[in-house]
Amino acid sequence: MDTQAVVEWFDAHERPLPWRRPGTSAWGVLLSEVMSQQTPVARMAPQWEEWMRRWPTPHDLAAASKADVLRAWGKLGYPRRALRLWECAKEIGEGAVPGDVDKLLALPGIGEYTARAVACFHFGHNVPVVDTNVRRVYARAEEGRFLAPPPAKRELAQVEALLPEENGPRFSAALMELGALVCTAKNPDCAACPIKASCAWQLAGCPEPSEEEAARAKKRVQKFTGTDRQVRGLLLDVLRGSPHPVSQADLDAVWPDAAQRSRAQASLIDDGLMDINEQGLFHLPH
Image 1: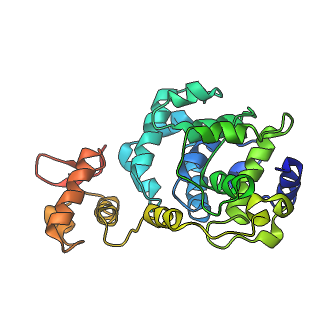
Image 2: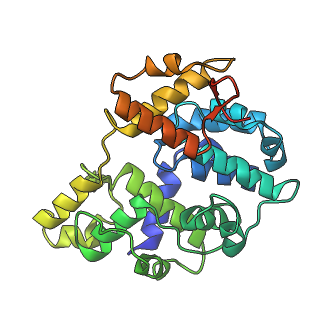
């Protein structure tokens, strides 16, 4: 892969995302990486701005209540991420976000991708960072297949082999941006791609994915309407929107399927996202 061409493209097309501003703290970068998982950047950027205003350091977030954190999370989805961030902030306390991948991995809620992203994008460590965008670009440019295979341990070594000795973190960010803006999942803009001439998929004649690959990709796309995730979100909306604990009847009103509603409510309680008081009323955790 022509790493220089990818970096030069990035120099011309990098999005002015708020966490890329000079002076953004390691905490700000960590927060952006957690928030953007499974959430479009355009949706989470205003939330990131608000969180950084309210809780500019881990110590600030650790001092907040769980209820305030869940209310501030709003409609970002997967609200357990908010509580894990709160737990992470508690662990860091008045200390600093570490720059070492292993030390980042030791923090609550910080997985392999987030640890490497913070180490790379904030601290400048030349470590491979692999998300769905990078996985897709690699599959097309290096392996000649339109759809990326499922995540595998070998992909870190594969992407690491591409990293230039100089400007590696910049190239990592560029590769991710290329997947987000040009080498997209369904309709890639190959005419705008800086590595089209050397892309293995292009050189192979742009083959269609196999039936097995297409079926696997279709299976990975998660629907939302009518799922327990949707019901959980509706139940949480009731709690977030009320300054006082609510009754079971208030919760029952949001979804007609009693069995599914009960299952979703039980999962919220199990996940620590909903509590019940001595009067039998429901509220966000304190």
